[in-house]
Amino acid sequence: MQEKNFSGQGLNLVRDIFIFSCYTGLAYIDIYNLTKEHISTGNNNNLAYL
Image 1 (cartoon, rainbow, N blue to C red):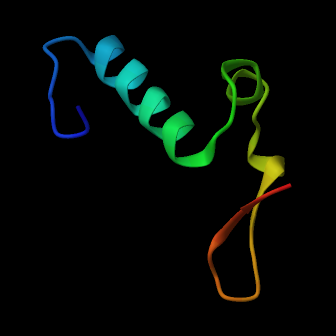
Image 2 (cartoon, rainbow, N blue to C red):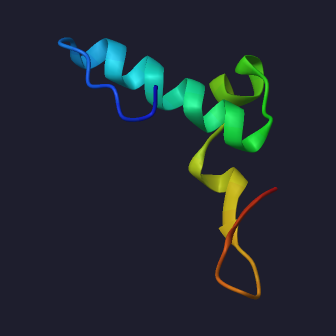
């Protein structure tokens, strides 16, 4: 599914959000409420969710 390109831009966004949710374990409502202020980099320059 990660490699699938859909014809509509909206479907590609939904795919990306779904994949992000799978990798992070965040629920839909958590992603809905997610802002740039919630994301930072850790000591090893990996992204961290606050």
